[in-house]
Length: 178
Image (cartoon, rainbow, N blue to C red; front, side, top):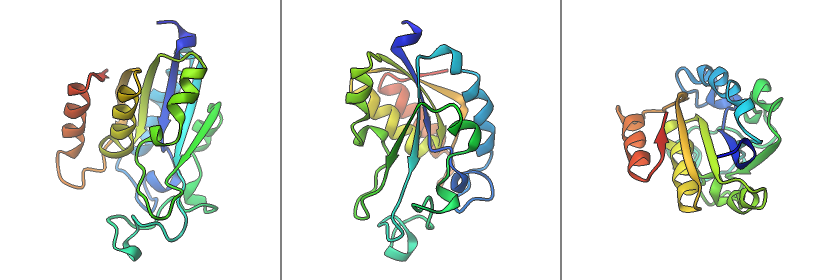
């Protein structure tokens, strides 16, 4: 498949998901270099971001599983500068306070990629067991060929092994793990 038919989708490499952030993923900063290494292999670079209102349903304050993170207008919501510098398109998700939204394909991203002639996606970012997983599965459902770069993802692993189970689920759905 040609470079022009391929997009790099970088999931949620944001301050709050990096080490020291509100919901920091261990080793999360180690995904940046392998993602940047793929820039010349693609025709389009998309960065996704969690972008929550302060009263989001997934936050502990509302009985959700997560601490407050990636709140609109806060430094924690910022995309890492090295990713922000290469992104040609930024897709925000999770802005509805009453709905969790892990997949970037719940935003209309699929239609936009199809309109650009994209047929294949290379995906990496944070976290393997949540936004990478759901975005990769959503991409397969939308008819894309999908590769996930294992070295460019890190898992939250709320339960030990969640990241590995997510990779297994993605493989079963036709995602190529490289």
